Image (cartoon, rainbow, N blue to C red; front, side):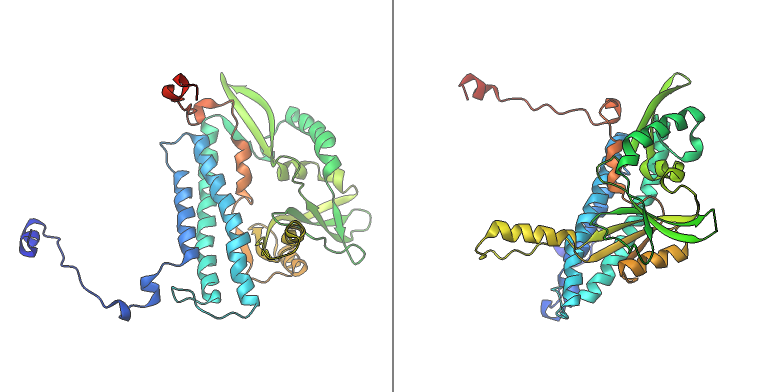
Length: 351
């Protein structure tokens, strides 16, 4: 069809405009690698908003999105931080210096984390309607508290390590993906204030499953977050103290590994790199929005973190842990299992 014919057939037809590629800016020719990855992960999150998916599969997409973002910061964003520390000012193919890339990444990642928090709030409401409850402490009755106290004393108390922070007990090292509760306590005997830290151990589940209940003939599956469980029995961890303020924070460290492939002992080289990975620089410090300003400044100072690495999160931290809420005994809230058919021709011929 001629151009004139195309214009008559489609009123919205526009003749392509030829441009001189040599005159185009790098940002017009190339898509930034980091921004492209964030756009991909936004697409993953969008699947959690797809109402045609079962509710627990939507939760799985949210968990994957959060886990992906953690890995992105610990490797890709860590690489940008390393370039800045090394004084590298060269531009990427799309024309951005490392500092400029980092600014764009933080803005886009902040928007993505806000969307993840909003998605989690919406999913909790829909899960509750489907009979899966993530409880808050004020929803617990006396029977629940008795059961939880037994679980806390027998399964959680032995693995918790409450730490007082003072000149004799400095702020401890927080490993990669470390999740902590920071507190300001007042001693009841003399009113003296004390800062304290409680790292949440990785060896216990983030969400404790409580006994199911029947409500108006319908089964209810109930969970309680670990940080809420600890809040219930804080007096067992710090007897003689009153809680004045508290907040949660989570750390993501540089996990990029650099390996010298010509090293004489490659195994030892990997072992050294993996140990170094655990103690990498902080590339993201996520702090819950409700943490008091004094405690926030205390954590930033002790972690030696600037505002560039700080992220204030409205909602829950560590949403990758929500995958623990995906349980197999609610098959109607999951995708139907896929059983691949074994090719009969292969079976007929003995493989």
